[in-house]
Each structure stands twice: as C-alpha cells, then as structure tokens.
Image (cartoon, rainbow, N blue to C red):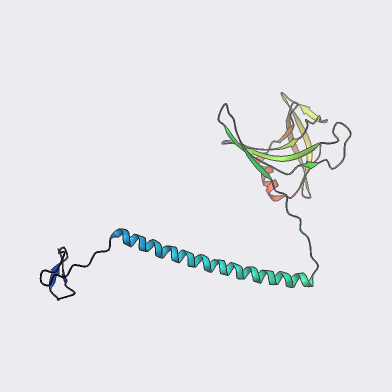
Length: 206
C-alpha cells in the first residue's frame, strides 16, 4: 500500500482509499490498461497516416520532376518506341488420382520462320517450363506432333541432335521426343533455364 497527498486538503491518503478521510474528497480514477492501449493505437494510426501522406507527396513530386525531364528530352530528340517484352503465361495442375501438384510457365505462341507445305503449313509452337515437388523440365510444345527426320530411334522415344540459337549465340543441343508426342524435351534442363533467363529470343532448327 502507498500513500499519496490529497489534492484538496493536503492530508496523506492511502492509494486504496475511495475518499480522503479528512475532507471526503474522492480519489481520482485510475486509467485502465485497456484505455492506454486504445490511446496508443490511435497515436499509431495518426502517425502512420502522416507518414503515408508524406510518402505520397514525395512520390507525386518525383513524378512531376520525371515528367518535366521527359518532356524536356522529348522536345529535343525524336521519340523512340520500345516494344514491350512478351510475357509468359503461368498455370498450375493437380492430378485428381494422385493429388500430385505441378506448375507451368509458357512463352507466347510463335510460328514457323519458314513456311512449310501441308500438313505443316499452320504449325505453331511455344517454349514451356514445368516443375513439381521434385523435378523441373524444359520443353517445346507444338500444336501437332512433328514427324522429324535425322533422329535416332530409342526405346519409346526419339533422340534429336540439332541446333539452337540463343540471341546470336549458336550451339548444338540434344532433344528427346516420346513417340507420337507433341512435346520435345531438353535433356540439360537447369542449363537451358539459365539461357532462357539471359536471352530474349530462341531459334530452334528442326
């Protein structure tokens, strides 16, 4: 128990007393822990709002400065249109029988650089990356199963030795195609993924 001084008469009063025994002045109410927490929360919200307002103002000013600089440059030099880099699409899949989950990323669809005769005149293709909890793989998908020549027949698949150009860098590559499949797979997947990240184009010779 502690003693405090009565604000009315100056007499020492116990902190547990409801009123001063000398003058009858009621003890001041204590601020509860809940009240303090609410007060701190309000202070935090006000502070955060002020910070957000400051950041927004700073960002707006920077946009104005950047716009002024851009207008100044455009007035002195001709405009140059930069085409946006094509974006890859992503998707996920879950095997209803096994519950196995897999994810995929696929490039935009492209067409033959040299038109072929029927039935390959409308062939299109895309590059894809797939992964599950254990493996990653890289492949080319086509809208129809290719019937390739100069390949080596193995047990259930064909081995394809060909060339691929990453940007301007030409290299030999080994691919595999399951019999009758619409997909052609790389064999060194991790190396190919590094080249995809570093390159803006790939040209495959089939």
